Amino acid sequence: MTQDRRLAASADLMTGMMHRLGKIAVGPGDVPGLARARHLQTMVFRCRACPDPGACAALQRTVLHLDAPPLFCPNAQALRALPAV
Image (cartoon, rainbow, N blue to C red):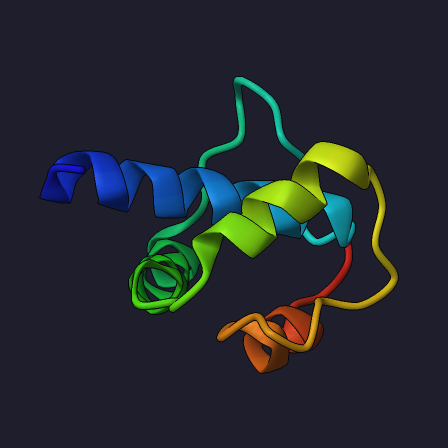
């Protein structure tokens, strides 16, 4: 997988996880502010370094809502800290 595709896949996984946790509303008009964008960028790079993105993808294929991030997620703490929308 190329660097760009891997980064895009990580961004998709992060967006999916945030949506399932009720931390972000996913829609065509959702554009985060600069500070939030920088925070999300950090989270995407952390996601990109995950040793098992397949586990996240498999979870998101079967679960539409989560009350808490999975323990294996390198962004679990950051996701818990985000306010719900």
